[in-house]
View 1 (cartoon, one colour):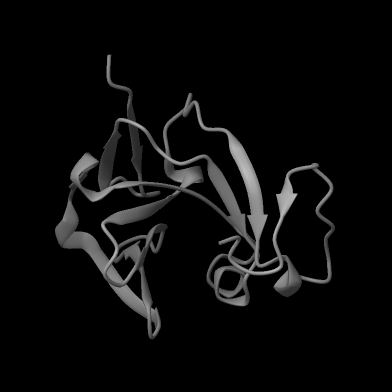
View 2 (view 1 turned 90 degrees about the vertical axis):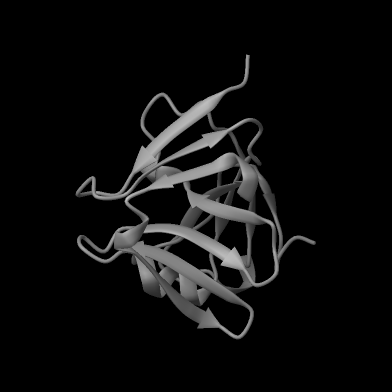
Length: 132
């Protein structure tokens, strides 16, 4: 049976279903993620064909760099998605999924850019940059 994970923004105007296999959660410590969220980001990703978004009229995309954009709810401001230009996969913020999410963490990326106010001590793989 195909696994389906449901999630939403804080106000509920946008909801989504990710079907099938998702990538393990990756924690991103880049300065853009930290500035947008106030800390680091925890995200999985899924093939675009397996992501259904309801309430997409409330979804606003911000081009945060020359090669990627971030999707958030225009009503409550919840960060929901991150997408590299030209990619057929969409990253989904792990905290937006309803529990139990059945997600597992795999690694930390952009560790050389992490905030000075915390340490990474969970034993997961750490990459200075993207991990690729």
